[in-house]
Image (cartoon, rainbow, N blue to C red; front, side, top):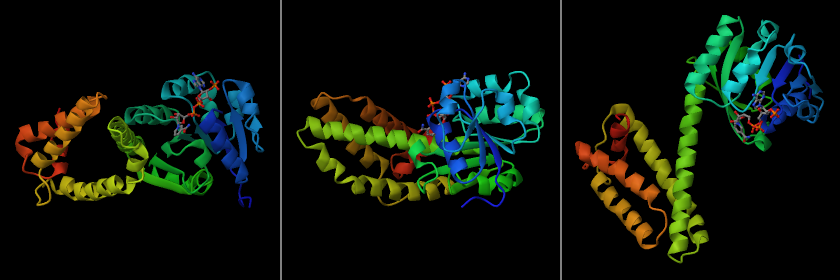
Length: 293
Ligand code: NAP
C-alpha cells in the first residue's frame, strides 16, 4: 500500500546494496531518484526508480538523500564536487556506506558546515534481506531527525534502530557485531578443519552447532554483568582451566599439521590475562587485558 505522503528520495550509488535500497523505497510507494557513477547501473535498478545522469539534478528538492558507496573517501569526493553541497541544503543525508566511527564524525562535520541534516547508519544485512524481517539498520545522530524520517526509513528495514546521539555509535555497534561475527566464523571454520584433519566428518561438528552457540550466549550474558561491575570472580571455571583446554586445541592443530595461528592467538590472549594475575577469575576477565595495550 502506498504511503499517504510519499517521500522524495535520492539514492546515490547503484551497487548491490544501493540498488536494493532504492528498489525497497520505490516498492513502498516513495518517489525515488537513483544516480550512479556508471550510469548504466542506475538505469538497471528499475522497480519504478528514476535514473538520473546528473547528480545535482538527482538530489535537488529531495527530502532524503541516501548514500551507499564503497567507502567514505568515495562519498567525500562525490559530495565535494561542484554544486552538490548547495543542492543538498534542506535535505537529510543518510549515510549508509560502511565506515569507522571517525568516518562518521567527519561526515557530520561536513554536513554541519553545509547546513545539511545528517544521520550515520550501518546496515546489518545482505541486499536480499533488505525490506525483510532479517534486515536491521542502526542509526546515530539527532533523535528528532531520526524520528522525522523513521516511517520512510522502515521501507528498507522494519528493524530501524536508533542507537545514540553520538554520531559514531552506529558504526561502533556495527564494528562490534561484525567482529563477533567474523571472529566466531573463523573459530568454527578452524574447528571444522580440526575435525577434518582428525578424520571426523565436519558435518558432525556442524550438527552440534547449538552446543557452541549456547555457550557463547551464556558467556555473553555473564560477561555483560561482569564488565559492568568490573568484577570477574565466580565459581564456574577459572581462566587457568580454560587455558589448559586451549592448549589441547593448539596441540591437536600442531599434530594434525593444520594452521595453528588462530588457536595460538587465542592462547596468547588468555595467557596474557593469567600473566596479569587473573588466572583464578572467570573467562570474561580477559576483557581487562584487552582494554590495555
Ligand atoms: P558494490 O556493489 O561494490 O557498489 C559500490 C558502489 O560504490 C557502486 O555504486 C560504485 O560505483 C560506487 N563507487 C565506488 N567508488 C566510487 C567513487 N570513487 N565515486 C563514485 N562512486 C563510487 O558495493 P555494495 O555491496 O553495494 O556496498 C555498498 C556499501 O554497503 C558498502 O559501504 C558496504 O560495506 C555496505 N554494505 C554492503 C553489504 C552487502 O552485503 N553488499 C552489507 C552491509 C553493508 P560504480 O558502479 O560506478 O563502480
